[in-house]
Image (cartoon, rainbow, N blue to C red; front, side):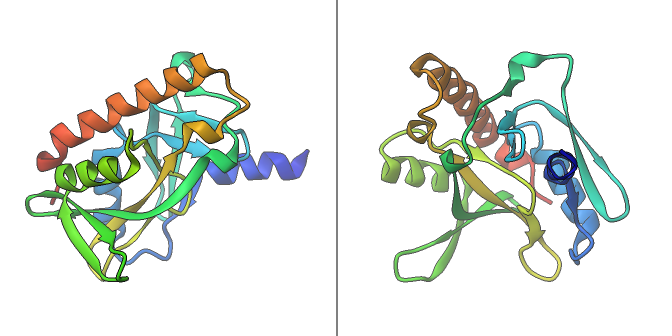
Length: 185
């Protein structure tokens, strides 16, 4: 039981001690927190509304306890997939670093990158963040690694539950796309 409690706390308490761009990283996360849901593997929950607090060396995520409709439960960890996609602030908004098939990386504006990703997936792209995703992009720039919910892999949920989660996360993603040009450095 103690190990489970520690895992739960760790899911929502992210160390940023190793980051070189701590202050810029904090501002960047605060700018994006309203758009990117957080996943807790220990609780198997997605939080689409949460408050973000900072200590000198950590980010603390506190889910909105007053609005239970923004917490999605029973989400299997296997349905959350790492994407290798990195968001980082740019003077023009948010840049998206994508790895190409030839193993080169390219940075595109968020809207263009997300449209390419949706085309490749032939469906919605449902980005989610979790512990360890806030990191350094280069010496002075933070980034957020994106994971994605693969709703079809959440087979423990009913079709209705999957559709509800997909709708809510897609709405957040569209809001992020519309606001991306305002969220850079």
